[in-house]
Length: 515
Image (cartoon, rainbow, N blue to C red):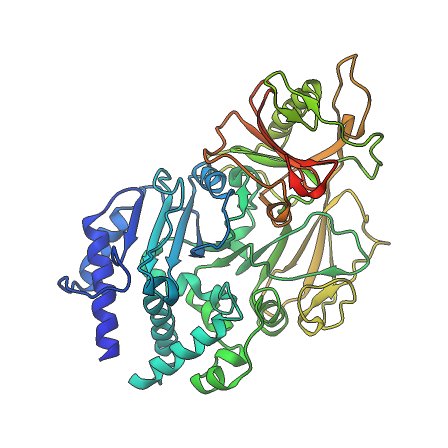
């Protein structure tokens, strides 16, 4: 009965999609949760061609998925995240929202995400708690091919229990494209995972398009890797997989997922299993090819725009004076003077030109004849630096700094062939220094001589917990710039450097109050 009920449920989902076809849609299984199904059943196969005709005629290079629960705290970052999705039309974004049982008892549905309805390359679906977990149980039972009807309820109960610890459901993250395949264009060759407390930069300029088709897994990494031991892991905030059945099959060989018996019996995976158990297993115990590439903003000072994200640091210099906020002409306070703000804006424009890739498929090659590649040895369970998960799941290697430079390079770690050796490749990355010329009346400070670089995305993992963290409800416009110092504040500048918005740390009160 339960399986038949699910079949009707999923057919109803497709019926709603069929009658609300548009370039951007909000698919909800009901207006009120919980619900009952009364619509006529329509088979999946009868709608498949209609479903995919609703997509843009340009096949998306990448489909990126996020699973979203109603948040318990303000989500200031969401409008800007959606603005960055709109700025990358070659990426198809799927948001899978689901409600909690306690919310359903109170009659609450899925939260509306600001800006999604205005985003042509975004899709969303709203599921109840039962629908969400039943999809997981049904999918994995089909893979095991040995579930009885009553097993679905056992598996669903197990997964719900596990989710109380693993709040972001990381133990199923590597399978999201497979589980939610009815909402993923099958022409997608690469699918990925993202967090929402991010701003994407320019995929056109910063994603390794020329390398991506050659790897099963593509992991975003930090560029500032110059330690003696370098951690290698599959990050939960940005990772990509080849959209192929053999990748799913390889990952399902993880002991916890091989059979229903092991899934029910084995210990829970940790609350960040994608970066711990899954990472360890994928890198050391499968023959899947992988590439780890520098992708994330790493600096305390950074600028996010709808056309790229950029990091700035002062190369280890101590600031020559504490912040003394200056008044902007609009009456708003700023961490920087007008001359400095205008200097940063010009530096961003210059950097876009430096990193611009050829369009229309003629992409610049990521690897050059100046790069150096050599074999490295991966070590499991022995990384001794700071970790946010159990050491037993760590994977690292020790680069040969006598053969390759420690600094001013981009590091790539990869397994190019199944069961092949793991190599590190370093590409020259000469530092770009920017002198932000102050007005004659401005005193020299830490932001007048900085190093900068561009990255694929910015993750506000630290900023969102600071007391100053606040942003307007309206998203960034194409000509606006969001400047952040992670310890001090956030500002939004107009194209001429004038401050449109600022939320700054109260220097007298510390991090307990924001201006």
